[in-house]
Image (cartoon, rainbow, N blue to C red; front, side, top):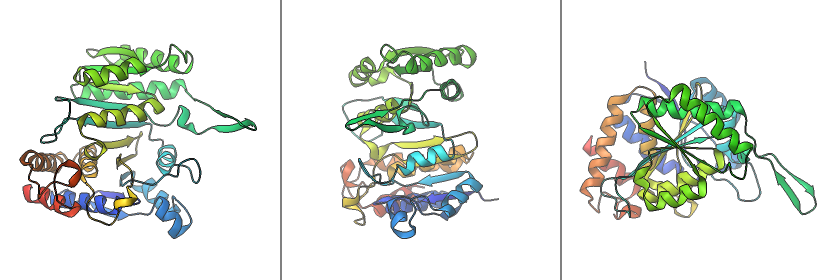
Length: 335
């Protein structure tokens, strides 16, 4: 029986890149049934809601989704739809693999890092208020349950994938209670389920310095919400940017896979955006669903396109001249 997947094209370049990813996944023989759903700023204009009830109901029913980028207003307007989805479906673990890609030259080689970020607590809880005029307070939330489950997830992930080291970035020297709880729980989970895995703690400013000096020393990074958001983008910069990095938001029985880059409205509709990040996220989704053969075929195909490095097959951001649909066609030919 075919698996039903919710597809949220998103805003800006979202429909173009998710459309390309869908074509590649279908061409690989994954045999998915797709339900296209509305979300984001465009959905607000069309339906009056950034997350229409039909979208929520479909994800609640099928528990799996592939999502394009969604626009989030800065400093005003509606709350981040990405954050709303994570909270609504308790997608507590953000997973972002970052690796050096064939054919994409950067300052570093042999980068192979997985950033695992707590996705529902911290400052991103969004609990803010104005104490008195001109004074705003934002609360950082850390619970033992939340800290333990993300640490357990990280060590289980490392063990299942043959990873040898988990490094926690923290600021417990200053935030002794919140970050202190985070590393306390990480230590306990290392003892309980991290046998054979090296464990390391670094104060985050030192960790950032070491990342840009020698990223190859890191394997799995475990971070609370805000730190994870910042560090995952920093790590993407080590391998060529957000256009070549996939992402997943995973809960107990629900998962949403996504492009981690923005909606890029200035280039929307021009067929020049790079769909690789969404395609790679689709590969993660297929593996999550146990569809390993089509996932491997797609990975081998896009690696072949990148390795050959033909200008007429690569998008502009990675040194080529091809359009969004052309890049997808190049991958499909390699399948």
